[in-house]
Image (cartoon, rainbow, N blue to C red; front, top):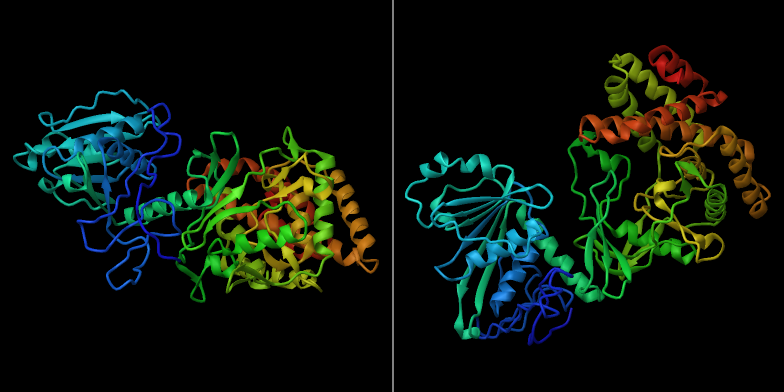
Length: 568
């Protein structure tokens, strides 16, 4: 980090939001010459982090709890509203404080216009009505309250404020006249400060509760975009996955695109076994360090993982090359030539001696964890824990569950790799992108590999050929298995097809077992029923795999306890 002078302006507006307003950027970062001697603050862009310079020349921590800056004109106040819209959610309260004429209503009006998508919407101050509701473009409720004339808090009860605000984004002027809010609160204090220039306002912002992390992350995103040269890009929300990550497509005025990945460090969940959370037992990535390490490792081998354009490892933010959206499937079925290349990619990867430690940044390494028996068994247990009761209506006795784990423990002995390889874990159609403008294996774009482990090569082959979302016949699966074996033997004549075939059946069955449990859990615990549509396909895969002789004992267990599954 380097010391920098803070002169000039810093962009605040949401990219794309100010087009048509006759100016390219809003600005908020003037030098605070009369605020505190010899102290300056950089906000939302430019340097690698906020830098505060004290009299002794030391640098305080980035993103201080209270965010302070100057808004040089009314337009900048409006732009602040656009920025706040990026992370406000139903149930939030924005507490707007300041004297009469300090800009509270100006800021509230900008927020409401942006959320409703109506830039010319009349938004009068609700001084006399006290409360004015609106509806955002996505259906969310918005409540604007001005409590300057409030005589007693009971008036809010009579007006139904609590009911309106419960699931709404609530903007409150003169919030000191109402009881404290238990949910997330964003405190915004505005004051006219002519010493910074005519029409200037001084802003002080602080997040409380869950709002603090969102505010910090929004600021970090803006700073990363500016540092990486994407601060002029429009941000378009992309469909997410079953994880807690979020993605946005960035589109510059010239049409070039990138992908913003927002993956804050994963907090530990509750302990579920031996004092360890689920994520630790099954070795899920806890930060973007894993993605960056594997990304660079794959690219070093000549594979088409997305290039990293910018990163904030602490906040879990990455700006990635946009590989597009050309799929390897068509009409819900594999495109054979594209799947064949995906198989060849795995064969090349698995024939390579691969390290278990990869660099992330200077002085930072990522250790790829082993896909050990403990992880495989714990994942398999999701079937009796979630799938059996939720989908089949079967409450398994402890004896049956114990037998299930014992049988899997014995079976997995045949799936211990002689030479562990990078197991990407989610190597299937949603995470493979076809790149027709490239040659050979580089036509297969690979994403979503942050949970990679050191495991058996058969696992990713099964992940591809028994895709939970794709209808593929057993004949098609066998043809591509044959292709994989030929490709491996071409690189290693000693490749043992029989041992691989057994491990393939075992790990394909384990993966199907795990996914049945995960999809049932996503429905019952997380309220995501859409994944249930894939259950019949996965049940078919599991029944197919259980026919292998190495899984005969587990097949007998299913025949006794979940016979309907084998009938699919």
